[in-house]
Image (cartoon, rainbow, N blue to C red; front, side, top):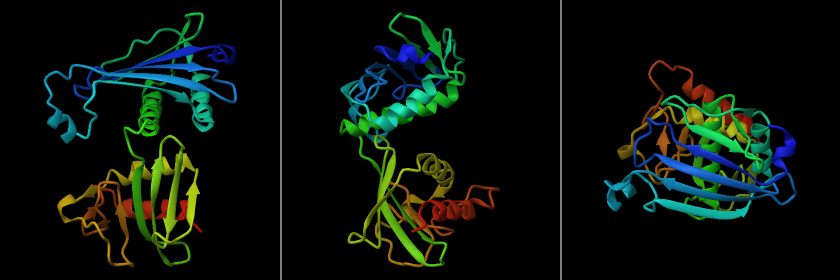
Length: 257
């Protein structure tokens, strides 16, 4: 899409793929104003579809908000504006005709012309993260709390714990416990790559521990309230022999102090 069309108020429409069932299926509309200014603003409306057959208890058990409708309006961080702008400029004129496994994504300019992503799958991931960021800043979701214990590049054992904020696009953490210095990394792409690898592992929840006592074991706290030790309660995916080595390498690259 041409940059000039991002200067005026415009809207982005999203709907989950047809093969995403209730209670997860949703429609969303984003209205951007002053997008290219120093103070971009966004209004968000999210509507979950066909939830009548689900009880409050069932929704909570799935970790979902019990409200069918969500609205929020506020300032858009420049970090997110820049990320979205990069994506929007690659949208091409046309209409969206997704397959069942693809989302509906359409950007509508002020003059009602429409543009769509080259890759619906890639932009689906981006917009899922953006919705997570909005739910976070609205107070409906908490930042993801993560912990890692690993041997660093100097062969010293280090434990890192902190919050991964989708709205701020950074990980704020401490080393050495609650009294340790506060640090942060804004290497969001690298953090995402780490998470994508981490979560294909297998975690034995009932054997995880809330308080990790040993200080010389490779372990992770993936945000579910438990620590998991590699090879004991945390296992590599079948056939992926380099899984743990890859995670250790990524941790050393991200958190070399």
